[in-house]
Image (cartoon, rainbow, N blue to C red; front, side, top):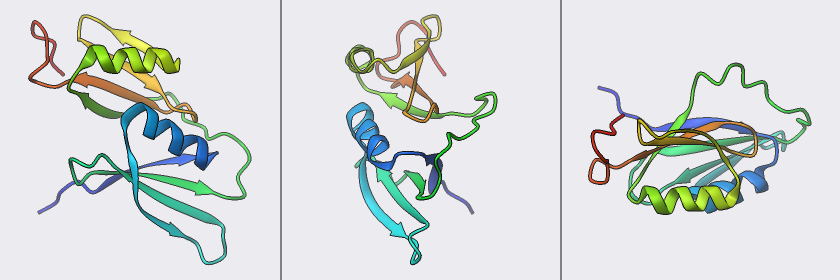
Amino acid sequence: MFSFNHFNFNVLDLERSLKFYDEAFGLKPVREKEAADGSFKLVFLGDGVTDFQLELTYLTERTESYDLGEQEFHLAFVAEDMEKAHALHEKMGCICFENPQMGIYFVTDPDGYWIEVIPSRNSAKDGAKH
């Protein structure tokens, strides 16, 4: 009856966020919507593989960072090559937490949102499952 469509993050600097998600995860804009009065812009990003999209909401008049609470929510990506993914994110300086026992790690985007990186089932090592 229901299927996933998109997940939303509000962002303070749209261009910075677009660059981050492209560099970190290869996400590209697939559609955009701008308010007639210019008060907001929505950019939906896709991975080119699934239909799932990340919606970046940019409120043009907002100047203060978003309150992300206790970070008890996150977006997750599957990495086909964890070593390559980890090396990229390490180079970008965005890794914020690692759990080697589970075979996962988290990165933060420019607005402080946590994003989990998990191995694909094909690349999971020694029972590292999520």
